[in-house]
Length: 177
Image (tube, rainbow, N blue to C red; front, side):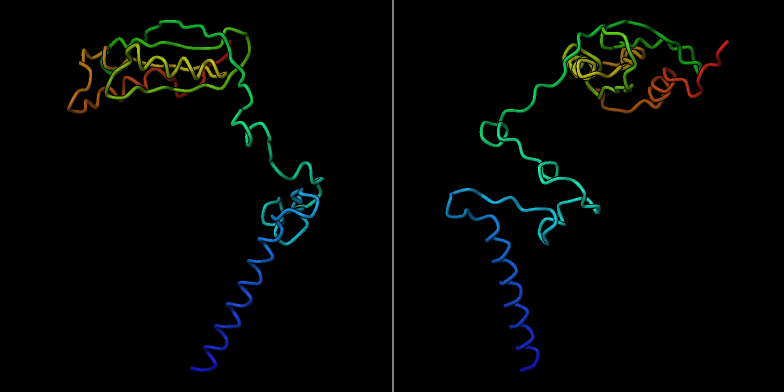
């Protein structure tokens, strides 16, 4: 029992020594500046990539504007084009309307299939895919509720609506002429 107690006490002393040395690195020096923890120190290695070749200015994320004022960098905003289109679900010929949102500027953008929830694709929900398109995505938003004449917030689930969604996205890429 005495041996276990001594080992436990030594472990606590080692742990406290390590914690105190970690805390000391964040303290200010006599000039009032906070030293930067370099990635090639024991503490910094856990924060850095396995290969330690970058300069200290590249190793740490720090943005004074965000830390001091809560300011984030301005995101890129695109003007958005909305196009109403329709397609048929081949399983039962149900016509499904959808809205295609995309940035107005020509170019290739990542695609998103936006599936609305129980509310349907009303004016409030349409804000979400429009916002994604404004950030640089092409967004396809099928309106499966109106295709099946389903009111907002239905209680039961209709499995047919799943096929209506997947029918709008081809599984195979069309062959080129």
